Image 1 (cartoon, helix red, strand yellow):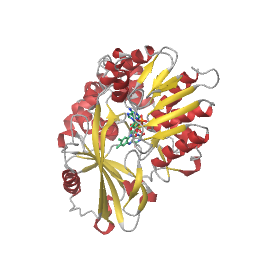
Image 2 (cartoon, helix red, strand yellow):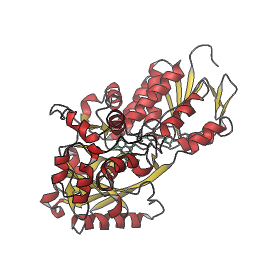
Image 3 (cartoon, protein in one colour):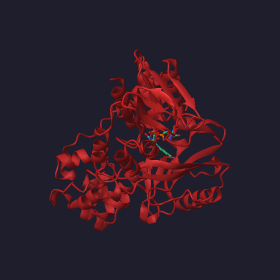
Image 4 (cartoon, protein in one colour):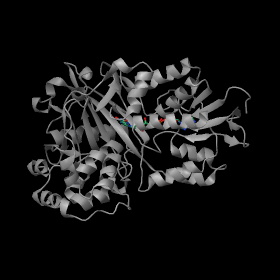
Length: 448
Ligand SMILES: Cc1cc2nc3c(=O)[nH]c(=O)nc-3n(C[C@H](O)[C@H](O)[C@H](O)COP(=O)(O)OP(=O)(O)OC[C@H]3O[C@@H](n4cnc5c(N)ncnc54)[C@H](O)[C@@H]3O)c2cc1C
Protein backbone atom coordinates (compact mmCIF):
# COMPACT_ATOMS: atom_id res chain seq x y z
CA UNK A 1 0.00 0.00 0.00
CA UNK A 2 2.67 2.51 1.05
CA UNK A 3 5.88 3.21 -0.81
CA UNK A 4 7.95 3.69 2.36
CA UNK A 5 7.22 2.49 5.88
CA UNK A 6 4.83 -0.43 6.24
CA UNK A 7 1.65 0.19 8.23
CA UNK A 8 0.19 -2.70 10.23
CA UNK A 9 -3.05 -2.94 12.21
CA UNK A 10 -3.18 -5.08 15.35
CA UNK A 11 -6.67 -6.12 16.47
CA UNK A 12 -6.81 -6.85 20.22
CA UNK A 13 -4.97 -5.29 23.13
CA UNK A 14 -4.39 -8.37 25.29
CA UNK A 15 -0.82 -9.51 25.89
CA UNK A 16 -0.62 -11.08 22.40
CA UNK A 17 -1.68 -7.86 20.67
CA UNK A 18 0.54 -5.69 22.85
CA UNK A 19 3.56 -7.94 22.26
CA UNK A 20 2.85 -7.94 18.50
CA UNK A 21 2.64 -4.14 18.45
CA UNK A 22 5.84 -3.91 20.51
CA UNK A 23 7.76 -6.29 18.22
CA UNK A 24 6.59 -4.50 15.04
CA UNK A 25 7.17 -0.97 16.35
CA UNK A 26 10.70 -1.90 17.40
CA UNK A 27 11.43 -2.73 13.77
CA UNK A 28 10.39 0.75 12.71
CA UNK A 29 7.02 -0.37 11.36
CA UNK A 30 4.02 1.95 11.76
CA UNK A 31 1.58 0.16 14.07
CA UNK A 32 -1.95 0.99 15.13
CA UNK A 33 -3.44 -1.31 17.80
CA UNK A 34 -7.22 -1.39 18.21
CA UNK A 35 -8.73 -2.58 21.50
CA UNK A 36 -12.49 -2.89 21.88
CA UNK A 37 -12.47 -2.35 25.63
CA UNK A 38 -11.57 0.89 27.38
CA UNK A 39 -8.50 -0.70 28.93
CA UNK A 40 -5.54 -2.72 27.66
CA UNK A 41 -4.45 -6.14 28.92
CA UNK A 42 -7.39 -8.40 28.00
CA UNK A 43 -7.32 -11.35 30.42
CA UNK A 44 -4.49 -9.67 32.32
CA UNK A 45 -5.96 -7.40 34.97
CA UNK A 46 -4.48 -6.33 38.29
CA UNK A 47 -6.52 -4.09 40.57
CA UNK A 48 -6.51 -2.96 44.22
CA UNK A 49 -8.20 -5.28 46.69
CA UNK A 50 -8.57 -5.33 50.48
CA UNK A 51 -5.91 -2.69 51.06
CA UNK A 52 -3.44 -4.19 48.58
CA UNK A 53 -2.32 -2.05 45.64
CA UNK A 54 -2.57 -4.88 43.15
CA UNK A 55 -4.16 -8.33 43.32
CA UNK A 56 -4.57 -10.13 39.99
CA UNK A 57 -8.06 -10.87 38.71
CA UNK A 58 -6.76 -13.09 35.89
CA UNK A 59 -3.31 -14.70 35.53
CA UNK A 60 -1.02 -14.17 38.51
CA UNK A 61 2.20 -15.60 37.02
CA UNK A 62 3.88 -16.98 33.93
CA UNK A 63 6.04 -20.05 33.44
CA UNK A 64 9.74 -19.28 33.84
CA UNK A 65 10.79 -22.42 31.91
CA UNK A 66 9.61 -20.91 28.62
CA UNK A 67 11.76 -17.98 27.47
CA UNK A 68 9.12 -15.63 26.06
CA UNK A 69 7.50 -14.29 29.25
CA UNK A 70 10.81 -13.57 30.94
CA UNK A 71 12.20 -12.23 27.67
CA UNK A 72 9.41 -9.70 27.24
CA UNK A 73 9.56 -8.70 30.91
CA UNK A 74 13.27 -8.00 30.53
CA UNK A 75 12.78 -6.18 27.24
CA UNK A 76 10.26 -3.78 28.79
CA UNK A 77 12.38 -3.12 31.87
CA UNK A 78 10.65 -5.41 34.36
CA UNK A 79 13.53 -7.89 34.71
CA UNK A 80 14.56 -6.68 38.16
CA UNK A 81 10.95 -6.59 39.39
CA UNK A 82 10.19 -10.28 38.81
CA UNK A 83 9.30 -12.31 41.88
CA UNK A 84 8.51 -16.00 42.37
CA UNK A 85 5.97 -17.75 44.54
CA UNK A 86 7.09 -18.57 48.07
CA UNK A 87 7.76 -22.27 48.51
CA UNK A 88 4.47 -23.88 49.32
CA UNK A 89 2.84 -27.20 48.55
CA UNK A 90 -0.41 -27.58 46.68
CA UNK A 91 -2.94 -30.23 47.69
CA UNK A 92 -5.86 -32.12 46.18
CA UNK A 93 -9.17 -32.15 48.06
CA UNK A 94 -10.97 -35.49 48.10
CA UNK A 95 -13.05 -35.60 51.31
CA UNK A 96 -9.99 -34.04 52.94
CA UNK A 97 -6.80 -32.31 51.77
CA UNK A 98 -4.15 -34.67 50.43
CA UNK A 99 -0.56 -33.71 49.66
CA UNK A 100 0.22 -34.11 45.98
CA UNK A 101 2.62 -37.08 45.73
CA UNK A 102 6.25 -36.46 44.73
CA UNK A 103 7.63 -37.44 41.33
CA UNK A 104 4.70 -36.36 39.15
CA UNK A 105 4.90 -35.01 35.63
CA UNK A 106 1.78 -32.80 35.40
CA UNK A 107 -0.03 -35.37 37.54
CA UNK A 108 1.40 -38.48 35.84
CA UNK A 109 3.46 -40.65 38.15
CA UNK A 110 7.10 -41.17 37.22
CA UNK A 111 7.88 -42.85 40.56
CA UNK A 112 5.58 -45.65 41.66
CA UNK A 113 6.93 -45.70 45.24
CA UNK A 114 5.95 -42.06 45.79
CA UNK A 115 2.48 -42.87 44.49
CA UNK A 116 2.23 -45.92 46.77
CA UNK A 117 2.63 -43.69 49.85
CA UNK A 118 -0.18 -41.32 48.87
CA UNK A 119 -3.59 -41.76 50.48
CA UNK A 120 -5.20 -39.83 47.61
CA UNK A 121 -5.23 -42.86 45.29
CA UNK A 122 -7.06 -45.99 46.52
CA UNK A 123 -5.10 -49.28 46.52
CA UNK A 124 -6.84 -50.65 43.42
CA UNK A 125 -5.83 -47.46 41.58
CA UNK A 126 -2.22 -47.76 42.76
CA UNK A 127 -2.04 -51.38 41.63
CA UNK A 128 -3.49 -50.45 38.25
CA UNK A 129 -0.95 -47.63 37.89
CA UNK A 130 1.89 -50.02 38.80
CA UNK A 131 1.04 -52.21 35.77
CA UNK A 132 1.89 -49.30 33.42
CA UNK A 133 5.36 -50.60 32.40
CA UNK A 134 3.82 -53.88 31.25
CA UNK A 135 1.23 -52.27 28.99
CA UNK A 136 1.57 -52.06 25.23
CA UNK A 137 2.45 -48.76 23.60
CA UNK A 138 -0.62 -46.52 23.63
CA UNK A 139 -1.98 -45.35 20.29
CA UNK A 140 -1.55 -41.56 20.34
CA UNK A 141 -3.74 -40.94 17.30
CA UNK A 142 -6.94 -40.14 19.23
CA UNK A 143 -4.94 -37.18 20.68
CA UNK A 144 -6.90 -37.18 23.93
CA UNK A 145 -4.96 -36.34 27.09
CA UNK A 146 -7.51 -38.11 29.28
CA UNK A 147 -7.63 -41.14 26.97
CA UNK A 148 -3.83 -41.46 27.09
CA UNK A 149 -3.57 -41.18 30.88
CA UNK A 150 -6.47 -43.57 31.49
CA UNK A 151 -4.87 -46.11 29.11
CA UNK A 152 -1.48 -45.90 30.80
CA UNK A 153 -2.35 -45.46 34.49
CA UNK A 154 -6.07 -46.19 34.88
CA UNK A 155 -9.00 -44.05 35.85
CA UNK A 156 -8.02 -43.19 39.45
CA UNK A 157 -4.72 -41.52 38.52
CA UNK A 158 -6.49 -39.69 35.76
CA UNK A 159 -9.44 -38.48 37.81
CA UNK A 160 -7.64 -37.67 41.06
CA UNK A 161 -4.31 -36.35 39.73
CA UNK A 162 -3.89 -35.52 36.05
CA UNK A 163 -7.34 -34.13 35.36
CA UNK A 164 -7.30 -31.76 38.38
CA UNK A 165 -3.67 -30.70 37.86
CA UNK A 166 -3.82 -30.08 34.10
CA UNK A 167 -7.55 -29.36 33.94
CA UNK A 168 -7.24 -26.58 36.50
CA UNK A 169 -4.53 -24.83 34.44
CA UNK A 170 -6.78 -24.60 31.36
CA UNK A 171 -10.28 -24.97 32.95
CA UNK A 172 -10.37 -28.11 30.80
CA UNK A 173 -12.01 -31.47 30.75
CA UNK A 174 -8.90 -33.45 29.84
CA UNK A 175 -10.91 -36.26 28.21
CA UNK A 176 -11.74 -33.70 25.51
CA UNK A 177 -8.38 -31.91 25.50
CA UNK A 178 -5.57 -32.48 23.00
CA UNK A 179 -2.62 -34.55 24.24
CA UNK A 180 -0.34 -32.70 21.82
CA UNK A 181 -1.32 -29.42 23.49
CA UNK A 182 0.50 -30.53 26.65
CA UNK A 183 4.00 -30.96 25.19
CA UNK A 184 5.67 -32.13 28.41
CA UNK A 185 3.44 -35.22 28.39
CA UNK A 186 3.09 -35.57 24.60
CA UNK A 187 6.86 -35.52 24.02
CA UNK A 188 7.44 -38.25 26.58
CA UNK A 189 4.51 -40.26 25.22
CA UNK A 190 5.98 -40.01 21.72
CA UNK A 191 9.44 -41.14 22.81
CA UNK A 192 8.78 -43.84 25.41
CA UNK A 193 6.39 -46.77 25.55
CA UNK A 194 6.24 -46.62 29.34
CA UNK A 195 6.11 -43.35 31.28
CA UNK A 196 7.22 -45.05 34.50
CA UNK A 197 10.23 -46.66 32.79
CA UNK A 198 11.13 -43.33 31.19
CA UNK A 199 10.69 -41.65 34.58
CA UNK A 200 13.50 -43.80 36.00
CA UNK A 201 15.97 -42.34 33.54
CA UNK A 202 14.74 -38.77 33.84
CA UNK A 203 17.22 -36.50 35.67
CA UNK A 204 15.98 -35.52 39.13
CA UNK A 205 14.99 -31.83 39.27
CA UNK A 206 18.05 -29.82 40.20
CA UNK A 207 18.02 -27.77 43.38
CA UNK A 208 19.48 -24.92 41.28
CA UNK A 209 16.89 -25.21 38.54
CA UNK A 210 15.49 -21.76 39.38
CA UNK A 211 11.91 -20.70 39.89
CA UNK A 212 9.05 -22.38 38.05
CA UNK A 213 6.97 -19.19 37.87
CA UNK A 214 7.61 -15.47 37.71
CA UNK A 215 5.38 -12.44 38.06
CA UNK A 216 6.13 -8.73 38.26
CA UNK A 217 6.07 -7.57 41.89
CA UNK A 218 3.23 -5.16 41.02
CA UNK A 219 1.16 -7.92 39.40
CA UNK A 220 0.71 -9.19 35.87
CA UNK A 221 -0.97 -5.91 34.94
CA UNK A 222 2.51 -4.37 34.99
CA UNK A 223 3.63 -6.70 32.19
CA UNK A 224 0.75 -5.53 30.00
CA UNK A 225 1.18 -1.84 30.92
CA UNK A 226 4.95 -1.79 30.46
CA UNK A 227 4.62 -3.58 27.11
CA UNK A 228 2.04 -0.98 26.06
CA UNK A 229 4.36 1.85 27.16
CA UNK A 230 7.35 0.29 25.38
CA UNK A 231 5.30 -0.17 22.19
CA UNK A 232 4.16 3.47 22.38
CA UNK A 233 7.73 4.55 23.10
CA UNK A 234 8.78 2.79 19.87
CA UNK A 235 6.08 4.66 17.95
CA UNK A 236 3.01 2.40 18.09
CA UNK A 237 -0.40 4.05 18.38
CA UNK A 238 -2.73 2.28 20.82
CA UNK A 239 -6.44 3.06 20.45
CA UNK A 240 -8.77 1.82 23.20
CA UNK A 241 -12.54 1.67 22.96
CA UNK A 242 -12.36 0.88 19.23
CA UNK A 243 -13.83 -2.50 18.30
CA UNK A 244 -13.02 -3.61 14.76
CA UNK A 245 -16.08 -4.61 12.79
CA UNK A 246 -14.80 -4.30 9.22
CA UNK A 247 -11.89 -6.19 7.69
CA UNK A 248 -11.47 -6.40 3.92
CA UNK A 249 -8.66 -6.74 1.41
CA UNK A 250 -8.34 -5.78 -2.26
CA UNK A 251 -5.26 -7.98 -2.65
CA UNK A 252 -2.72 -5.24 -1.91
CA UNK A 253 -4.18 -3.18 0.95
CA UNK A 254 -6.25 -4.11 4.00
CA UNK A 255 -9.20 -1.97 5.10
CA UNK A 256 -9.78 -1.99 8.85
CA UNK A 257 -12.84 0.01 9.94
CA UNK A 258 -12.31 2.14 6.83
CA UNK A 259 -8.54 2.76 7.33
CA UNK A 260 -5.90 1.32 5.01
CA UNK A 261 -3.02 -0.90 6.16
CA UNK A 262 -0.37 -3.15 4.57
CA UNK A 263 -1.10 -6.01 6.95
CA UNK A 264 -3.22 -7.08 9.91
CA UNK A 265 -2.49 -9.12 13.01
CA UNK A 266 -5.63 -10.61 14.51
CA UNK A 267 -4.74 -10.89 18.20
CA UNK A 268 -8.33 -11.13 19.39
CA UNK A 269 -10.00 -14.42 20.44
CA UNK A 270 -10.69 -16.89 17.60
CA UNK A 271 -14.46 -16.26 17.71
CA UNK A 272 -13.90 -12.52 17.11
CA UNK A 273 -11.49 -13.28 14.25
CA UNK A 274 -14.08 -15.67 12.78
CA UNK A 275 -16.64 -12.87 12.61
CA UNK A 276 -14.15 -10.53 10.90
CA UNK A 277 -13.14 -13.13 8.29
CA UNK A 278 -16.61 -14.57 7.63
CA UNK A 279 -17.22 -13.05 4.21
CA UNK A 280 -13.59 -12.88 3.02
CA UNK A 281 -12.29 -16.31 4.13
CA UNK A 282 -15.31 -18.48 5.00
CA UNK A 283 -13.33 -21.74 5.47
CA UNK A 284 -10.87 -20.06 7.85
CA UNK A 285 -13.77 -18.41 9.66
CA UNK A 286 -15.46 -21.81 10.17
CA UNK A 287 -12.30 -23.30 11.68
CA UNK A 288 -11.87 -20.28 13.94
CA UNK A 289 -15.50 -20.41 15.06
CA UNK A 290 -15.12 -24.12 15.91
CA UNK A 291 -12.54 -23.46 18.68
CA UNK A 292 -14.62 -23.59 21.85
CA UNK A 293 -13.88 -21.75 25.09
CA UNK A 294 -14.63 -22.31 28.76
CA UNK A 295 -15.93 -19.55 31.02
CA UNK A 296 -14.72 -19.12 34.59
CA UNK A 297 -15.49 -16.89 37.54
CA UNK A 298 -12.77 -15.80 39.93
CA UNK A 299 -13.95 -15.01 43.45
CA UNK A 300 -11.32 -13.26 45.55
CA UNK A 301 -11.81 -13.22 49.32
CA UNK A 302 -10.01 -11.54 52.21
CA UNK A 303 -10.35 -13.75 55.30
CA UNK A 304 -9.45 -12.23 58.70
CA UNK A 305 -6.04 -13.65 59.60
CA UNK A 306 -7.28 -14.49 63.10
CA UNK A 307 -9.76 -16.97 61.55
CA UNK A 308 -7.13 -18.77 59.48
CA UNK A 309 -5.83 -21.99 61.07
CA UNK A 310 -2.08 -22.59 61.45
CA UNK A 311 -2.21 -26.02 59.78
CA UNK A 312 -3.08 -24.37 56.44
CA UNK A 313 -0.26 -21.84 56.40
CA UNK A 314 2.23 -24.11 54.56
CA UNK A 315 -0.09 -24.63 51.58
CA UNK A 316 -0.24 -22.60 48.35
CA UNK A 317 -3.73 -23.90 47.60
CA UNK A 318 -5.63 -26.96 46.43
CA UNK A 319 -7.47 -28.51 43.49
CA UNK A 320 -10.87 -30.20 43.45
CA UNK A 321 -11.28 -33.28 41.18
CA UNK A 322 -14.45 -33.49 39.08
CA UNK A 323 -16.28 -36.31 40.91
CA UNK A 324 -16.21 -34.26 44.14
CA UNK A 325 -16.65 -30.85 42.47
CA UNK A 326 -19.66 -28.60 42.75
CA UNK A 327 -18.65 -25.24 41.24
CA UNK A 328 -15.21 -24.63 42.80
CA UNK A 329 -12.38 -26.21 40.78
CA UNK A 330 -9.28 -24.71 42.41
CA UNK A 331 -8.33 -22.46 45.30
CA UNK A 332 -5.13 -20.45 45.50
CA UNK A 333 -4.06 -19.24 48.95
CA UNK A 334 -2.76 -16.09 47.28
CA UNK A 335 -1.12 -14.41 50.25
CA UNK A 336 0.75 -17.63 51.05
CA UNK A 337 1.78 -18.14 47.45
CA UNK A 338 2.97 -14.53 47.09
CA UNK A 339 4.78 -13.19 50.13
CA UNK A 340 4.22 -9.57 49.03
CA UNK A 341 0.45 -10.15 49.26
CA UNK A 342 0.76 -11.24 52.91
CA UNK A 343 -0.49 -8.95 55.67
CA UNK A 344 -1.10 -9.26 59.38
CA UNK A 345 -4.80 -8.58 58.95
CA UNK A 346 -6.05 -10.97 56.26
CA UNK A 347 -5.42 -13.99 54.09
CA UNK A 348 -6.20 -13.60 50.37
CA UNK A 349 -7.92 -16.51 48.60
CA UNK A 350 -8.43 -16.67 44.82
CA UNK A 351 -11.19 -19.19 44.11
CA UNK A 352 -11.85 -20.48 40.57
CA UNK A 353 -15.36 -21.59 39.67
CA UNK A 354 -16.45 -23.27 36.44
CA UNK A 355 -14.67 -25.00 33.59
CA UNK A 356 -15.32 -26.72 30.27
CA UNK A 357 -18.64 -28.53 30.82
CA UNK A 358 -19.40 -26.70 34.08
CA UNK A 359 -20.93 -23.30 33.20
CA UNK A 360 -21.15 -20.72 35.99
CA UNK A 361 -21.63 -17.30 34.40
CA UNK A 362 -25.44 -17.62 34.35
CA UNK A 363 -25.28 -17.35 38.17
CA UNK A 364 -25.67 -13.99 39.92
CA UNK A 365 -22.84 -12.46 41.94
CA UNK A 366 -24.56 -13.42 45.21
CA UNK A 367 -24.77 -17.04 44.09
CA UNK A 368 -21.11 -17.15 43.00
CA UNK A 369 -20.01 -15.63 46.29
CA UNK A 370 -22.19 -17.99 48.34
CA UNK A 371 -20.90 -21.01 46.39
CA UNK A 372 -17.28 -19.97 46.93
CA UNK A 373 -17.72 -19.30 50.65
CA UNK A 374 -19.78 -22.43 51.34
CA UNK A 375 -17.74 -24.87 49.28
CA UNK A 376 -14.33 -23.68 50.45
CA UNK A 377 -15.61 -23.54 54.03
CA UNK A 378 -16.81 -27.15 53.70
CA UNK A 379 -13.52 -28.30 52.15
CA UNK A 380 -11.47 -26.72 54.92
CA UNK A 381 -13.87 -27.35 57.81
CA UNK A 382 -14.10 -23.60 58.48
CA UNK A 383 -16.87 -21.07 58.71
CA UNK A 384 -15.54 -18.34 56.41
CA UNK A 385 -16.57 -14.75 57.07
CA UNK A 386 -14.76 -12.68 54.40
CA UNK A 387 -13.94 -9.08 55.25
CA UNK A 388 -13.83 -8.22 51.53
CA UNK A 389 -14.77 -9.96 48.31
CA UNK A 390 -14.53 -9.40 44.57
CA UNK A 391 -16.11 -11.31 41.71
CA UNK A 392 -14.55 -11.37 38.25
CA UNK A 393 -16.43 -12.92 35.35
CA UNK A 394 -14.26 -14.23 32.52
CA UNK A 395 -16.40 -15.10 29.53
CA UNK A 396 -14.42 -17.16 27.01
CA UNK A 397 -11.63 -17.36 29.58
CA UNK A 398 -9.76 -20.34 28.18
CA UNK A 399 -9.79 -21.68 24.59
CA UNK A 400 -10.31 -25.43 24.65
CA UNK A 401 -7.89 -27.33 22.44
CA UNK A 402 -9.91 -30.33 21.30
CA UNK A 403 -8.06 -33.39 19.92
CA UNK A 404 -6.19 -32.54 16.66
CA UNK A 405 -6.33 -28.81 17.41
CA UNK A 406 -2.71 -28.39 16.20
CA UNK A 407 -3.49 -29.89 12.77
CA UNK A 408 -6.55 -27.68 12.31
CA UNK A 409 -4.55 -24.58 13.24
CA UNK A 410 -1.65 -25.58 10.93
CA UNK A 411 -4.08 -26.01 7.99
CA UNK A 412 -5.77 -22.72 8.86
CA UNK A 413 -2.50 -20.78 9.00
CA UNK A 414 -1.18 -22.36 5.79
CA UNK A 415 -4.26 -21.02 3.96
CA UNK A 416 -4.04 -17.43 5.25
CA UNK A 417 -3.24 -14.79 2.62
CA UNK A 418 -0.01 -12.80 2.89
CA UNK A 419 -0.41 -9.77 5.11
CA UNK A 420 -2.66 -11.53 7.60
CA UNK A 421 -1.45 -13.22 10.81
CA UNK A 422 -3.04 -14.71 13.92
CA UNK A 423 -1.74 -14.38 17.47
CA UNK A 424 -3.00 -15.21 20.93
CA UNK A 425 -4.27 -17.93 23.19
CA UNK A 426 -6.51 -19.63 20.65
CA UNK A 427 -3.72 -21.20 18.60
CA UNK A 428 -0.34 -22.43 19.87
CA UNK A 429 -0.63 -22.34 23.65
CA UNK A 430 -2.90 -20.71 26.21
CA UNK A 431 -0.40 -19.44 28.78
CA UNK A 432 1.07 -15.95 28.69
CA UNK A 433 4.53 -17.02 27.39
CA UNK A 434 2.94 -18.95 24.50
CA UNK A 435 0.81 -15.91 23.63
CA UNK A 436 3.95 -13.75 23.56
CA UNK A 437 5.69 -16.32 21.35
CA UNK A 438 2.75 -16.31 18.95
CA UNK A 439 3.01 -12.51 18.85
CA UNK A 440 6.69 -12.71 17.88
CA UNK A 441 5.83 -15.09 15.05
CA UNK A 442 2.93 -12.94 13.82
CA UNK A 443 5.18 -9.86 13.84
CA UNK A 444 7.90 -11.71 11.90
CA UNK A 445 5.36 -12.81 9.26
CA UNK A 446 3.98 -9.29 8.85
CA UNK A 447 7.39 -7.61 8.84
CA UNK A 448 8.48 -9.67 5.83
C1 LIG B 1 -8.70 -16.39 35.30
C2 LIG B 1 -7.51 -16.65 34.41
C3 LIG B 1 -6.32 -17.07 34.97
C4 LIG B 1 -5.22 -17.33 34.17
N1 LIG B 1 -4.04 -17.68 34.75
C5 LIG B 1 -2.93 -17.78 34.00
C6 LIG B 1 -1.65 -17.89 34.61
O1 LIG B 1 -1.52 -17.87 35.84
N2 LIG B 1 -0.56 -17.97 33.81
C7 LIG B 1 -0.65 -17.92 32.43
O2 LIG B 1 0.38 -17.99 31.76
N3 LIG B 1 -1.85 -17.78 31.83
C8 LIG B 1 -2.99 -17.70 32.57
N4 LIG B 1 -4.19 -17.49 31.97
C9 LIG B 1 -4.26 -17.48 30.50
C10 LIG B 1 -3.78 -16.17 29.91
O3 LIG B 1 -4.01 -15.11 30.80
C11 LIG B 1 -4.51 -15.85 28.60
O4 LIG B 1 -4.54 -16.99 27.76
C12 LIG B 1 -3.83 -14.70 27.85
O5 LIG B 1 -3.70 -13.57 28.70
C13 LIG B 1 -4.65 -14.37 26.61
O6 LIG B 1 -4.05 -13.28 25.95
P1 LIG B 1 -4.53 -12.87 24.49
O7 LIG B 1 -3.85 -11.61 24.15
O8 LIG B 1 -4.41 -14.01 23.54
O9 LIG B 1 -6.11 -12.66 24.59
P2 LIG B 1 -6.97 -11.64 25.46
O10 LIG B 1 -6.30 -11.31 26.71
O11 LIG B 1 -8.33 -12.23 25.50
O12 LIG B 1 -6.99 -10.32 24.56
C14 LIG B 1 -7.77 -10.23 23.40
C15 LIG B 1 -8.27 -8.81 23.28
O13 LIG B 1 -8.96 -8.65 22.05
C16 LIG B 1 -10.00 -7.69 22.27
N5 LIG B 1 -10.96 -7.79 21.17
C17 LIG B 1 -11.84 -8.79 20.91
N6 LIG B 1 -12.54 -8.52 19.80
C18 LIG B 1 -12.08 -7.32 19.33
C19 LIG B 1 -12.41 -6.52 18.19
N7 LIG B 1 -13.34 -6.90 17.29
N8 LIG B 1 -11.75 -5.36 18.02
C20 LIG B 1 -10.80 -4.94 18.91
N9 LIG B 1 -10.45 -5.67 19.99
C21 LIG B 1 -11.08 -6.87 20.20
C22 LIG B 1 -10.55 -8.10 23.63
O14 LIG B 1 -11.28 -7.03 24.21
C23 LIG B 1 -9.28 -8.43 24.39
O15 LIG B 1 -8.77 -7.33 25.12
C24 LIG B 1 -5.32 -17.20 32.76
C25 LIG B 1 -6.52 -16.78 32.19
C26 LIG B 1 -7.61 -16.50 33.00
C27 LIG B 1 -8.89 -16.03 32.37
